[in-house]
Image 1 (cartoon, one colour):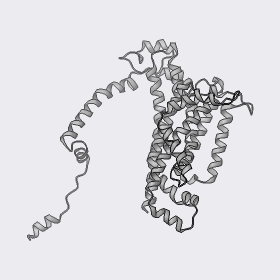
Image 2 (cartoon, one colour; image 1 turned 30 degrees about the horizontal axis):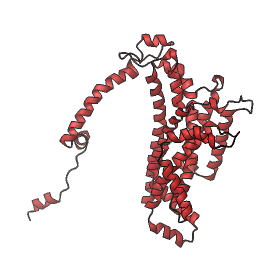
Image 3 (cartoon, helix red, strand yellow; image 1 turned 180 degrees about the vertical axis):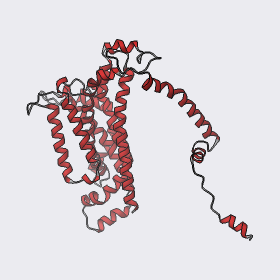
Length: 371
């Protein structure tokens, strides 16, 4: 064989790097991709300038009355910019609902405590038994702040709660109680005891077969009909129970998929060590199963946080209902886009934080499995 030919044959192809190579491989790799890229750029050029003008260039930040916003070209006029003065005037109603105005520092502090305890729970070095007591103390502080009635705080009935604190409370308690319940349901569905397995299967399939909004209606309208005379359950508590039941069914099916993905050898290895069922589940099987389904679980948590907005249908004053009440003000009529964009940004911040944290945790767990 010709030595020059052999050298050319064994030489590795040169790697093309740089922005042009990236564009060619990602955006113009085929005629179809090239067409889609051109159409996407054209759509962005058509939409982004007008959107940027409405959001940042032509909006009104200095108006103090609805008439000034209307005169300067508010959201109701296609040629004008956004009226962010509406958010400045109504932000306390949107964030805290109809909670007493002079006491709104309490839900603000409660929101800060909830966010702080959730953030601490996301740091792996805090994953110790002390974290449970930290959660109990934090939730007790949130309850004292929201209800009051002690330590000189004015009592506020939970029918006056609303806005962002109520949304966070529904989502936090929903995730905290639905997660262990979902794990128990997943283990029960894989149980060898027929009665337990049948009950778990019926519960999971029944709950997953109906939308959350129907469960909220049933908890609000039908549940009081089955209670003894003179007994009643708070509307907020009934909505919280419905959210927990709904999320637990979906978590159960996700965790069951993770349990089925664990090789049989892991079970046999745990049996050979003489571990009991609960010991091998807690120390060997369940940690691996949860690591496998980390991404689907994060999706369920994000959906649960957003689905708390459905409590508006039973009259609970969550973040969405508070924005709706702000828009209903006759003086500020016509600025619904600003209100819903404001709460959309709030939902996005929390959902994006959950998504990024789940990705980071998934990478950490993947590194541990690769070692």
